[in-house]
Amino acid sequence: MNSTTMTVFALAVGLGLGTPLVSAATGDDLLATYQGQGAGPFSAAAGARAWTAKHQPEGSGEQRSCVTCHGTDLTKSGKHATTGKPIEPLAVSANSERLTDPAKVEKWFGRNCRWTLGRDCTPQEKGDFVRYIQSL
Image 1 (cartoon, one colour):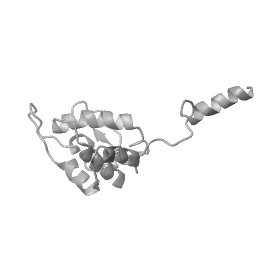
Image 2 (image 1 turned 90 degrees about the vertical axis):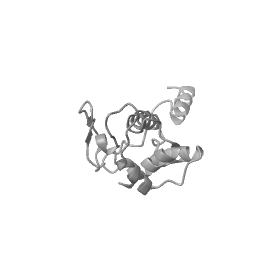
Image 3 (image 1 turned 180 degrees about the vertical axis):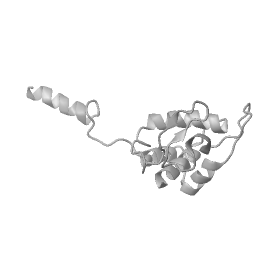
Image 4 (image 1 turned 45 degrees about the vertical axis):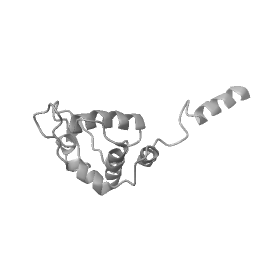
């Protein structure tokens, strides 16, 4: 490799276009995003209460909560209520991949909030859930 090629490669890697030199996003990065949307301060206790709160989305014949699929112990695996597919633990202490990919977090908030609540979660609710998950 000549020096120009090495410089371009080093720049690409440094910008995240190759092997990343910076760490993945964290729950704190997500909280900063939600705070930028006008939410906060965030509370693990509020997240825990919301986790177990029961909802009956319009058109659903059953009550649901986050516990329905994820369980009460987030250090343990859950199980999808409809398919029975295992769900890896949500607690960062039990699964180091949790809260590291903002796109995945938003994807699952979108699906799970609409299924459980019948609507999208607010930035405040998301932040409280992230605080709760971080606390375990």
